[in-house]
Length: 532
Ligand code: PHE
Image 1: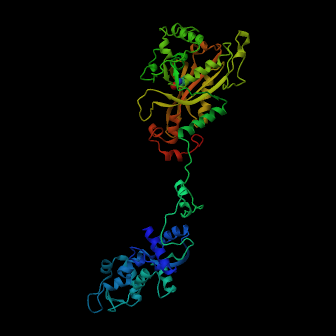
Image 2 (image 1 turned 135 degrees about the horizontal axis):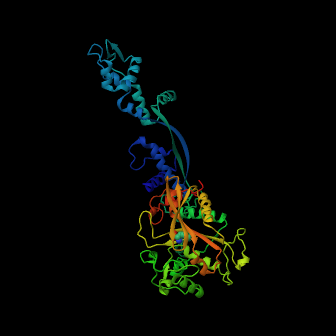
Image 3 (image 1 turned 180 degrees about the horizontal axis):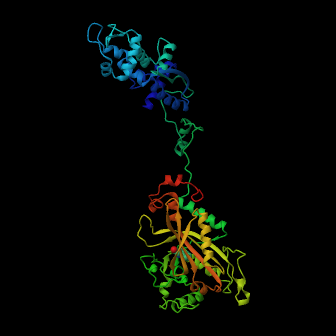
């Protein structure tokens, strides 16, 4: 179609030299002359395409024409209201006068009302007793004739005044139209060669580039909209939580090691080797490689000893120690594995070792020195550490559980820390996340005593939800690392997915991560979840 119209324009120009008025062109398949308006739109497309190749030039002429409104179109078809009223009445003296109720039945309430008034004015009808009759046997329905004239010509011979009256009666409306005058362009030809858009090696070697026509660059084209990236809700929440920790003076732990050994993930945390969490149903073990490099020897021995025989005031688990169990490689089930190795590193100076402890935060002011009881107090530096990263658990997936998720983890190590410090920290931290109301419930972890589960009242959900787990690390864990007795460490683990789901109103975790994630939602979700 488009090509045919371009060809028609070129052929007509070839014959006539110019096309003064494109309304004289009859398009292929155009039978309805009333469709000139649409025809000009199609022609404009062809003109633009030809002029971009400089085959033609054209100028635009604006026109104003009229089209019928819905009511106008109904009058063109069925006659004016007054004519319709007149048509259903008997001529005076020739039949039963029609009572108003009956008239309404015959032509409809609206036509009966509007039509009667006009028909009376025009003296087409009159009252005869209780009913209505025709006064004249023939009428000229000028309104209907006008509608038909406007419909086919877009105007009225009667002139602008008559048009204005019809516009006022909302029977017609104005429509802007256009038509074009077309001249030959500098590259006029009657054959449409597809312009080249690329200069190819073939064109250069054959020399055809010299005679080819090229499509011009359109510097005004808007181009394809560029899709900007957007952060996934989990990453936004992660950033927010990260900034809360940073503003509270915490340093981030390096959590890139998704694979850990049984030693760092469990043994160093005083998790008994027979603990159910260590079974294959709960933990993913690696098959190749399946065993880790040995941990620092002296520390390893101390850990094995406290498990098997106790020490540091503890009886230990009194169960045989297994090197095999300790060296198994696994996908970390919690980021507490990283906390343990960072704490081990933090205690290096207390053990009298020299280490590069870059990345460990120190804070001042709360440390008391205890030189008098013989502790090597200068060697210990307090630390506040956090991490937000992925952990893996061999769980059946459902609406609220995935086999991998993110943990917000943290530890604070200082002399003389108490449970009240942990509770105080939690209150401040959760308040910064927008959760003002929190409660604690005693819990059990092999590595902390006491342990607390943290519940927050969720205003949107109207109920208490578990948001984390925490506790004071046990001496069985800290002392083998080399920490002096008066150094206490508290720590916690908080899920990242749950607060994110609550904040973004997501009820199924599979719509938060995985192939069911709605990119649209990701793009439109607010940048800040907690401080709204
Ligand atoms: N590791 C615990 C968990 O995965 C969280 C925790 C960390 C608890 C540190 C106490 C101390 O749930």
